[in-house]
Image (tube, rainbow, N blue to C red):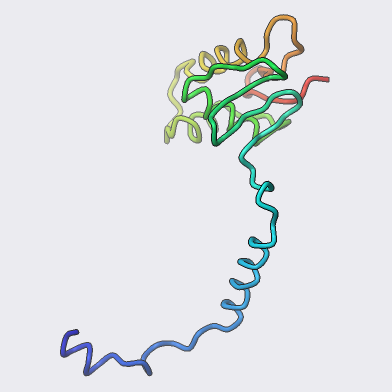
Length: 141
């Protein structure tokens, strides 16, 4: 320990603990410990569509869906926003980490590929293009 530290910094120089903040932190930890172990959101579900975030698998009903890493991330993002229209710019920012909106059809191409994997011709569609706005994922009716 430096000489400066010994001479100028001591236990009395520390600010007093904020008891309210400490009690709040303890309460949050207690609440987390009381939760059942299986309550963690490791599997996302929207209707028959299921995405396992740990195993990195996807399936619709009994049918397994093979996804590329970007498709997995895109589907995960959409499933967390079930029923919400997600604009293309938001997808570019959150899924691709773009900080600008390029004039390209990147999102449309990836979403089209994902839609073909998730929605087979004989199944009701779950991923819908909202013209001029973005995309929406919802359970089939």
